Length: 409
Image: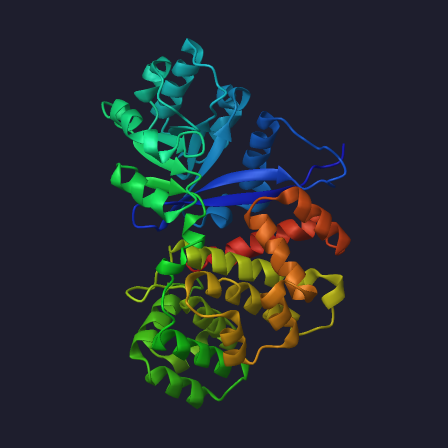
């Protein structure tokens, strides 16, 4: 039987400081959209376990965080669940599970063995009383349980030692309301869609970063790059924190920009300069979900460019793809237009077209990266096929992107 391929869906879970603390892992079939290829939940969960622990590498996917994995009854009751690393996973009991004495006993045993359990898409119901004493996390779907009627349900959970996780949080108002009501964890892409009033002003520090990016792109002399950094000690400090956090086995602490360039090379330093645009002004913010999104999107596009038949022989394609991925998020969080970014950096026509209207080859890659982020795998798979990319190449590109991001932790 032909081996089934899966793409990785990885949605961040944030804490009350809006920092990434976990991911929900979903593996979806990347078979041709012309075929139904709908596998049942147990098969999908089994694929998560097998692929995460063998072909992918759980540490690469999670980067040291916990992974939430959906559990249907068959998988939950199976002894094969014991292969999961207890410290790195949270078992999500799907809302379709029927509460029986056998299920309660199994959950109690799993907890005694050291597993963390969560109830998925949950609303309070007395029939779950026995499970409320066992599970540690309750996931509340805001689409099914709107914010305005959450207070009474939260009160009913108060006698139990539970953490509440709000999922499908799509606006900042929803996040703030849930946080005020006592939710500790949050899942959804509200952080990537701030309102106009919440956008950050693109201040002198941001402009200085664009200047540094241009120097790096123009392969400027090291003296010129160092001089540019000296004009902003805060950015120098931020960059060195980033560089020294990278898991590259550097034995000697990097003390200055010249040392960083000599140790890691210009290409890596250019990457850190680009990512600094998404770090907070107070701290590096490596767990900021926007750093996460920008890093994975850019690295994924870079890996796709290296494999795309149309770009073979174009030695600048990978770098342009990475740049497109990074810059595509700037307009979302800053009060700066893409036109201003383009004029500041003197970008190529191909990158400019991709950022302005998603046209050209880099526009296509950007669109594909966004589809994968939204887990619209069927449409993405159709586009990948048209571009001459195999399922295995896409999965490898994803893993290399996750691995590169994890190396920053």
